[in-house]
Length: 360
Image 1: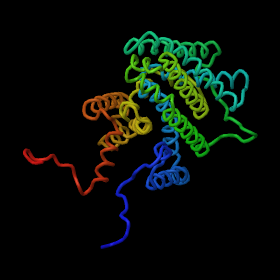
Image 2 (image 1 turned 120 degrees about the vertical axis):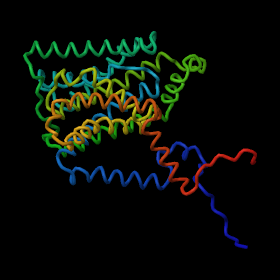
Image 3 (image 1 turned 180 degrees about the horizontal axis):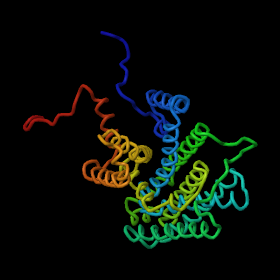
Image 4 (image 1 turned 90 degrees about the vertical axis):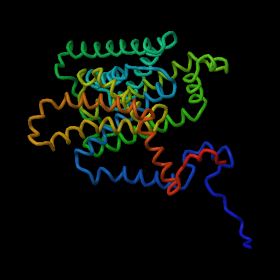
């Protein structure tokens, strides 16, 4: 009989430090390392089109993570996401145009404006819920977009506000590869902030408020304060995304912040999977790439040029169909698909089979 000590099968935690560690297994550490390597090498291997597409994904991921904090975790509905993006972008554009403020001032200023608007967005949540709260945030979206349009018309910026390439320490931020790394850093920073918020007391309070406000109040949680905090943090991150969008595109116009943009961000967290930061990222990737995939599919059809005039309508219709299909057949979103794949490979070649009737 062997005298060797048997090894434990599986991954077991033996302390609280392991419980709260972001990376708990060697496989997770190695996978993250390989993923980071791929992200860093991507702009040196891909074409300009794919670099721009990846940059769009990073921008969308920042806004989707912010909305996931508010809706997926704190349980507060908002349809004013495009208005917050507009506020951040126009704050940046106005400061750069009127005061010639540098990059390191405009972006924090836009973030601060977003936080202040978050207080305004959040005040109705103290009295309103559900559909009524959604309508109140939608109304504020139209107010922000209206003010942006008025500024454009009064100043004579008929096609939008043009921004020069930002400069930091004498170094001009220009080119797709440079912006790729800046937006990647912005998305990584946002994810790090969200992870730390959710792993602490704030995240637990938001989950409690989302589950049941009365029980949360009975547990000593300041429900009104936590609601306002969720709106402030989410709005600040969203406005920061709008500021980065303004610099990345080089111009700001109200035409870029339609109601459909708010719906797209809501779709990101629904398609990705509510209550999951990974779901927000997967949803941002899916919703950003989806229109390009539809266009590529149409261009492969015979007589492809004839579809150019209806491409916008086809994108709208296909987007709506995909949202309905996810709501009906995959309510857990892409995160649910990912977890089932994980379970399949962890259990393969074994499968769960229901016990036959009568067997114990």
